[in-house]
Image 1 (cartoon, helix red, strand yellow):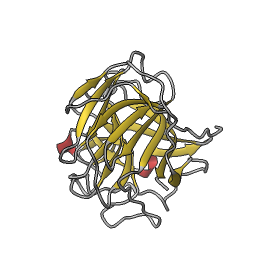
Image 2: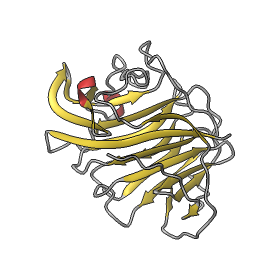
Image 3: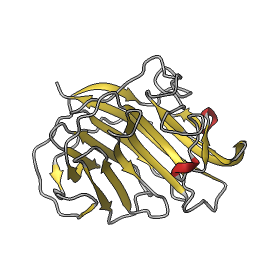
Image 4: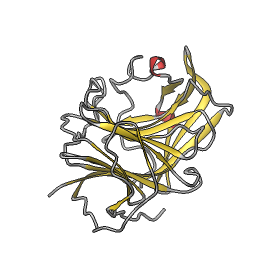
Length: 259
């Protein structure tokens, strides 16, 4: 798959002053925003996940760093859930009983905070970084993909997006840091029918989210340190799947840093 470098346009839909606000569709043209220099990227051009960049263990996961039923997750994370081909990462959830107590396997990849399994080229985001994921979201209900950051205790967590696949129109965008805030973005179209680029500017003065180059949320500052970058497809226990397998695809994930 040919890779296209996505440069976001500062097309503001709505500046949202309060936590848990809902962004609307209004927008005006603005100047082009240049993210900065590329400091981390995976274009998934190989034949397997790059274990020099990624681990599947995370200290965000309470059960041996590979599962977290207390967080409404049904899955156990495995390398087998991750495949790379034709420039795409495919994360596949399967109801295949991978571990006692877990009926589902699926995938989480992290650049650090990996319970002693840190990849050789571990990476942490900084205030001011711009995180961008281009992906095709799963459509069957019961799945909960996200790109997010984790510093080891959750105090700086940033959700570039959370998506619950029973609702094909909503993205949940959250800065969990004190003084942060969140938005629910309601798309006028089904988000699972096409590829989308979802991005987040991590402050330092404001946190701003973009969908396909258009601003969709603006919240408080971010001042985190040591935050690993995580991408996953959880299986959601509150609305369990009716299928036995489902996949999502990722074209790339990139982090830009101000010059």
